[in-house]
Image (cartoon, rainbow, N blue to C red; front, side):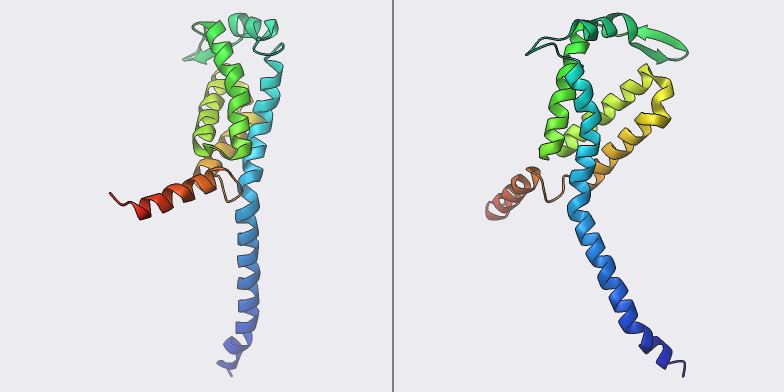
Length: 170
């Protein structure tokens, strides 16, 4: 009698495992682009506010980096060195890195750069960790761990390099 019970469970277990494999397969396809877009959007929105026309940093952005944004380190607030240059780099990065993420091009590098930006933003706004920075950092780390996924430009590029390496071993 005890042996008939496990046999009765086998079709049920098989069905559950098949369903879980389908869920994992679909999530493996959908999760990476969703993570990429979720991380890209807040930075892209912020990047749009930094510009005042084509290749022209807005005066408000320059003012913020020169006068308002301070790095809070060791109990003191320090201004950014070369604030105009930092403003230009940040404004460019807040547009370029999200675009790379959305396309899935240089995905892990873009996620790492946005993680570093998030860390810097945390130093500027120390109270923002619970509302924004923790989530951005989690998304960036998730993207770095999972990679770009199959729906990305990185996928055919990596497949091309892999095929090339097999044909031409060192």
